[in-house]
Structure formats: structure tokens, C-alpha cells
Length: 479
Image (cartoon, rainbow, N blue to C red; front, side, top):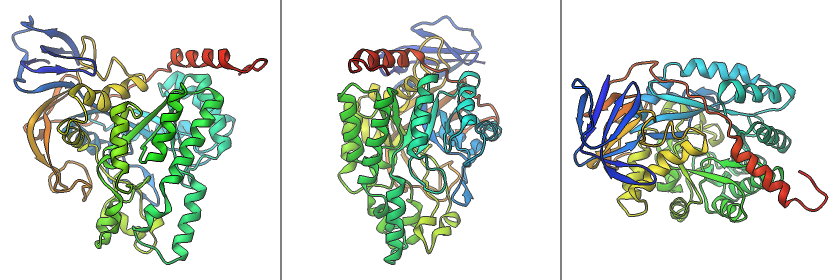
């Protein structure tokens, strides 16, 4: 099947041009005017629309077993919802249980993800350490195309990585040319504050943000950044939510350290008043970690995104319905952490970013697609409209209005954190692997059509880091 997209404005992270785009065999084959294409090509009129690379959500958790239950969104429904929102690829997380072999957990996630309707890849979490983890990391990088490893600095007595594990894993990442990533919250402090609040009789969702204040995130961000600096390895911080963490990233980048930051659409838009609602179920529906922050932090995140301190946007899409959230009815520490957003991210970011003048069209493409592709070594296969790139495209209607609601979204969850919000700017058509999969509000997807995308290690960046470390080491000291 071949597709010709005519009359649109092609928007990449570096430039915009008015051109037609021809796709065949899942790839972009030609870009320009008056293209010579087969007569049987499907023609899409994109007049008045923007032709952009499909979104990449670098942080999702489909059907994650977590906190005594399993996320309600599976890989089929979750990737379909992403396509409805203009996202054509996700990077999900393999999270082994402590002492579980990494390769065993990886195969489990691969089996689950086989139902995906768009392309996908994996980060793998390091939740414990021994020689087998060291070996499996090498296998994952060299044979399976995994080039990033996640470290939870929170969730004590579950999946939290102690400093010793961070040091061992970060160093192994440096050897392999892989990117260490961190969930930056001080798990010891969180555990202490949770117990203190429960003892004081605070058991509801309003206690959740009190148990994870911004200082908890700032301290962990600083610690992870300093460990990475000492070892000479780049670092990616997921779901940055507050000024304290932004400041640590800004300081490190100012000092020449390769540190990257991700923020969530929810953290950019919502504040911690959501936890003080009188309706328990609604307040609990917003429980995630890090929590939504006091007013003021949202604008800090926006400015960091505008200024380049933060490079990517994601969702941390992890769905739990009301009956699952109710597991913590009498103890906020037992409310499963997670909210949705894979379908809403791009619309919310366009509405609050481009429509309000915070982002240009090209900057929107950068923070929703291109930067993730570059950081995780998918570019230019993904993240751009270019000859030879995958035909993962969203035809965007900047005038289209859409109301976000659990009543109409495709996400498999009974709550929407943006409920009732009307946005301007939404997908007109989504194309995945050269196939029209979303049009006129309707999905046309095939279960299992998504491909697992390998992401090679990126030695060039790491060689540069190592050379810099050697040239700037104190006299007589080799790193």
C-alpha cells in the first residue's frame, strides 16, 4: 500500500516546508512538489494541516504488575489509544522483581507486547545486583537492542535500587554505551514520612504529596547526577516534577555534564489541589509518583522545557481504575500509583504550548518526538519526516477542538486527569508504518502489527565523555 499526503505543511524539529509526502512499504520515499507516484496511491488531502513525525512516548507502563494489582491498560489497548492521540511509538519498561533474572522478565514483557498495534521498545529496570545482572545487561544491549536501564530510587522494600546498585549499574552502562535513567525520589525519606503521616492519622490521598515533598526529589536528582558525574556517564531523569530537580539538572548541564530531563503533561498542567478534593475516588485517581506539585512548579517546568533544560515529554501512562485505587481506602500508601495520558499528551501540549506561545511548531515536534528519538538512538528512523525514515506520521489539525473525557477516550481506564478540558489542536489522521490507523475519530488497527524496535548502543557519545574525563582528570589520576 502507498500513500500520498498532499498540500500540507511538513513540520520537523529543525524546519518547516510546504511539500507533499509519499510513503510506500512503511517508509517515506519522497518529499517535494509534483511527485511522480503510482496512480493507485491513496491520496490524503492535508490542506490547512501540519504533517509531523508521530509522537514518541518514552515512558509508559502497559499492564504493569504493581502494588498488589495489574495496570488495566494492556499493550493492545494502550498502543491503540496512543495512535488516537498521534503517538506512533512507545518505550515501555521491563521491571524485574528483586532476584528475578533480567532476561526472564524481558521475555515476559516481550510476550505481552506482541499484541501492540504500533511500534515499541523497552527500557529495562535494574532492581538488584549480582554477576548475572552484569552479564544480562550485556546481552540486552548487544543482542536485544536495549540501550537504556531504569533505576528506581524510591519504593523501599520493593524495587528501590540502593546506591551500591546505582554505582554498579551506571558503571556497566558506561562500559556498554547504554543510558542509565532514574526515578529520582529518596526512598528512605518517603518511607519515613509515610509512616509519620499514618501515625498522625492522615490516611487519605491528601497525605500522598506530603509524603513526597519536592526536597525528596531534589535530593535524589542531585545524588544520581553526582554519581553519574563521578563515573563519567550520561544520565536521563524521568518525570521531573519540581523546581528542585530542574535546578539540579540546570546546574549539571551548565557544568558540561550530559544530563537529560523528561517531564509529563500532567505535571506541566495540574497542581496538588487535586489531592484535597472531597471526593475520595477522584483524589485517589490522581495518586502517582512523583505527585502533582504546588502551584508555581508547573511554570518552572514549562520554562525548563522552553529553555532546553528539559528535552522530552512523556506520560508515565499507568492505568488503575477506581476499584483498584480503592485498595488504599484506609491507607494512602496502598493506593496504586499511576495515571493515564498516552492519548492526551500531544493535544494538551499543543494547546498549552503552541497555542499559548510557549512552543513553536518545530519545538513541539522536538519535545514530543525528535528529542526522544535522538536521546534513545532511534533517529532518523523515527522522529522526523525525511526520505528513508519510517512512515510514522500524524497529520495535525491546529483548528480542531476536542474535549478530553473518560467517556470518550480510548484508554482503558475509568478516569481522565484532564476530564472536561477542551483543547484546540488534535490529530486529523495518524499513519503507522505507512498505514492509516486513525481517521475521522475512528481507529483501524491490527493486533500485533506493532514491531519491536531495537535501539543500538551509542558509543560515539560515550567515547566523547570518556575522552573528556581523561583530559579533565586531576594530574596523576586516570578514570
